[in-house]
Length: 244
Image (cartoon, rainbow, N blue to C red; front, side):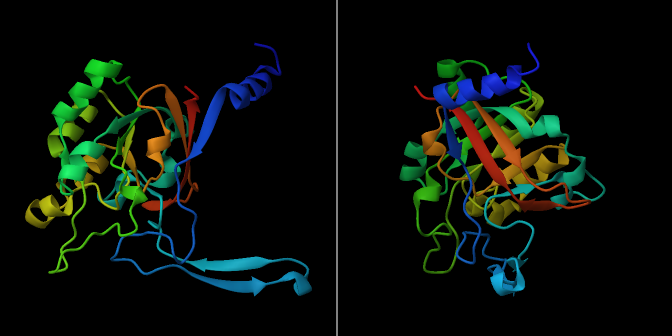
């Protein structure tokens, strides 16, 4: 490849592929886990000062965000230790929208993954696997019942074990604010989230617009700060997808 080969490839990508933003914009109105406060924004300097600067106050796991292993597991990898090679990955999107429409507490199973592979082929090693539930299209992401209990989909522990132990995934993602469906975590705790992070993998939560990404053939670019010893941070994730 010539010295300008990558530049030429980028121009080709812009013509032949579509770029999908998988992240929420960040504001006090951004969806976030209900246990955290909404962010606040203060103007510190403005144009009469010669420049504009804001001060943002928010938790690290706010809106679309990355969870490093350190989020749940002491003495494990923080954000600054995630290799840049693991931030650009093949993206597989498993669509369970029909099952979630029938059961909002649905937990994605190993069988769902195997059925996906029957149609699209084996999930490649060192990939990013995201669950499309279309939950991000809802206005009420917590979906609480009359008693205040949350109801939304999540992962099944056996599905995650299959992805880690049989497919060696680098990361997983979902449109909800938890890895575990609340109907399960209320009984067993956050076993799915603990498992994926304990395996030295990372995850992206509160993804959006996975409906715009095909099941197979895309790349995901996960951007987040190289924050030292950070357990997580707001993230900007982009999918580069075949147009057809």
